[in-house]
Length: 435
Image 1 (cartoon, rainbow, N blue to C red):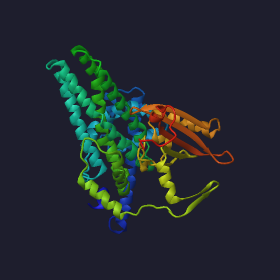
Image 2 (image 1 turned 120 degrees about the vertical axis):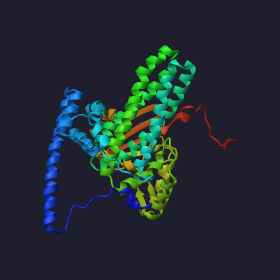
Image 3 (image 1 turned 30 degrees about the vertical axis):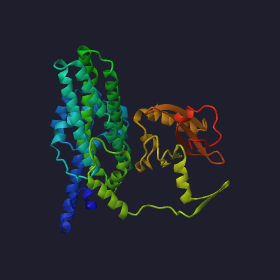
Image 4 (image 1 turned 90 degrees about the vertical axis):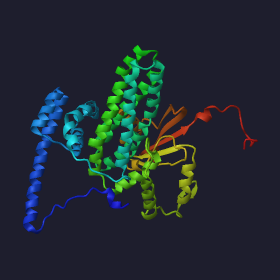
């Protein structure tokens, strides 16, 4: 497969001769003024909507005053509103309404075909499977009055269990696509859409948990209305937002090198509901054999007060530690993470150079800021937390890293699975038959 299949073709801006150049410049200036005027109209409609304008009135204004809109224009509009101070929580609250207002215009926009090995193509394949599972969920729910209650309940439980796979789909989007968009200065998706992903996660968790306690058809009817239907609406709404706003805008913003890196890193998170095309594996193998990797001087030793160590030894040592280490510098930028075989929380190379605030869902950012602020002001040197994660007890510690004069250099996150440690009793001093 050719490397340039990852690049969207662009038309030349220049014709032949000086007259053509001036004509093109005038045309470009006119187009820019039209875009700015349209952007002002759209921004006014959205702000009025947030102030109480009805969806019907907003839709009428859009159709009369703007008429059409592209996915990248919507994404840029929301980004502009964030830049001007509208909170991401406010935008998240209304983003379903934004999509509803612009839905007909977005559906008319031509969809760009992509290579079968392109990350966007693979995201869309997963979305088709998500839609099939949601359709199965809806059809099962419709049987509630015609089939036996135990059978309907069991079938609902089975489909909801399969739908937990959306976690992999969302993680690949959040941990790979969002960081690359942020590097292009495009922060909106990670601030707004990540929050919507978490709402869907919460709805799925609640729907799965509450189903276990349902005893009969009457309770099932209330469950469908209260729990299942909101989940169905949101997960299908996310498919629409991804395919009509996020993915087209990403194709516009990211270049071939970005997509190649996303493709290579995707294996670390995995795919769900689909088999990865063989073409993808072959492309990655080809790239790994032909692209030059950035390397360090491996034989140079680092001299320290308590000894010296070669760079070639340092990486294996850090990756052998029975804990995960992540370092954020004094400017809140993620600079390094260890890569142990049994890493607890997902990390991809795409997050390197990312602001730590963008590595967390929006509702967690305030806590992150509180920790960093306390470290920078010298009020605290550490914080510790412990949580249950996938039935394991995880111990999370944050340390302020300071130089010999006490100047703040950054924050070190240390994460350790202490499930086995907590169960230790007595002593063990020698090797025994277990070794």
